[in-house]
Picture 1 (cartoon, helix red, strand yellow):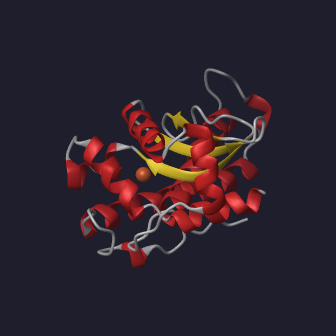
Picture 2: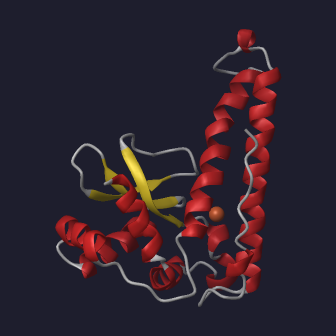
Length: 195
Ligand SMILES: [Fe+2]
């Protein structure tokens, strides 16, 4: 299939605490991942796997980067989908699941902030298929650290490119702002879909 970058231009200039330049630049990077994903998938079809090798092989290199481009594309899609200019709040089933997992909203937010401080990559909120509960996990780059048997409910981009234009090195301030622009309706819909 041909992967297509979704149009998130409606977010430019609309997200509180995020400048046009920050969001535009980031959307450009997202489009780049989608382009590379298509390129890698196309090249894989045309490349003979026979000479694959751990040290170097054309097919091997494509396989090593395939997940970078795939996760880079769809983590970004999830991230932009789960932000909104309109204030929203977790409620009903999702809020119940958050309280079950963390005990309070404050502890949940403290987990997100601590997780963000622990990675140069991504924080994901997931529903774990093994225990049925909500979890946060951290990922490095786009392809390292994703736990199997988990469905992503919310993605938080912690790469410096996500915040450096607006916040410099102050990732904590970016995460504080992110928590104000999370689209909890979208996160709740993802949660409901799994039930
Ligand atoms: Fe990003």
